Length: 199
Image (tube, rainbow, N blue to C red):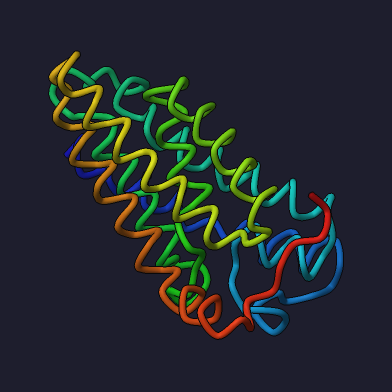
């Protein structure tokens, strides 16, 4: 029962639609009806502005972090791997019960999961993302590059720590990110994907 409760809590945490809440409470806007229609940080930046975008992104990261720490809070982290629970938060973010199962693209919440488990990897991912964004100006492509970097990191780390759960979950998270950005990839090829201008 404890395991089931933790899994449900993780999914519900992930399902909190940060972009929808910030948009409606502070701007009177449903961001699903603007921009890309996505509930994540990128569309929040484009639709609501920098402050809102930062707030939504931070909230989405925090969802993943808190969910990943649930097994520790409940004292069952020896028998229920934190990364597995973090994965349910990411699923909740992508398919939120509180927003008609139409959620974000898993980038920030996935980062929050890794922040709770491997803070160094999270920091490196932020650096890789920002460098990529500076060079290419595409948030979507930078997110994919960060996902690929996470895979490489986890594989290299495995030969040192034998942390196979990290490899498995990172592959899953990166797979989510890449799959959720497949339409963006098409737009980049067609040169119709919008570029950021603030970096």
